[in-house]
Length: 235
Image 1 (cartoon, rainbow, N blue to C red):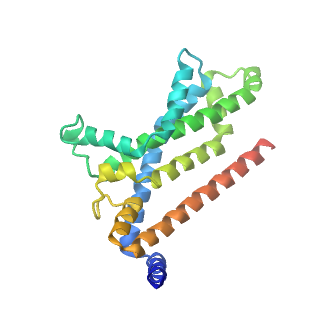
Image 2 (cartoon, rainbow, N blue to C red; image 1 turned 90 degrees about the vertical axis):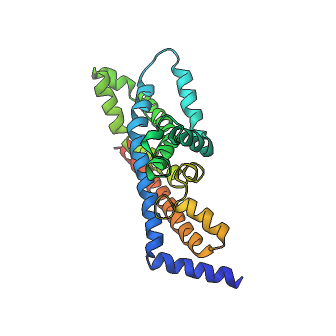
Image 3 (cartoon, one colour; image 1 turned 30 degrees about the horizontal axis):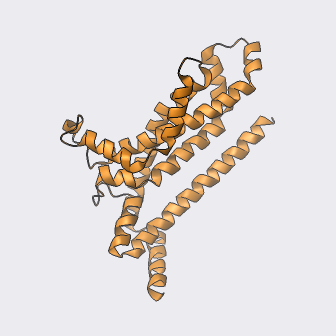
């Protein structure tokens, strides 16, 4: 019991003392995950918007597929990316395996379906709600979509936060394609797994504390954005 108490105390000292090793890991984690979310948003938001306002044969199948991909197993995604980036893979010459770029690719693949599916649902609901008004003003497709994006801006930001939460907490895919190399590809989740197995509970707990704070912050921001969206709906 005393060992656990000492580990917790040392963990808080690492966090509050802004330990350089811990900060390096946290920074790499945030950089990789934020980059993945930005790339996923560039890909996923247009897909979600297109599915929300368009009607074409096979649309239902695509929506079901995108929604189902929200539950992609991270280790499977990691394996696929590994095969693509390995020396024998089609992208092998790029030498991206065991780099932060490889982790960004894996996280992007995991986050795109989340952003696309949630954005599609948000914009489709708004399209139904404002359909008559949009027709009344005679807006074209682009103007209508721009209006829907503006009206759903808070919900869409919540969608991005959900994607970031998935990315920053991911371990299976990034450890496969990143290799958990010290000072190169070691992020919070992979470090927690490694240090726990080594018995170095202080660093693992310190990173766990940071990860919990990040998760709490994401949920708090999502709550505030939902509240802002509800207020704007009544203005």
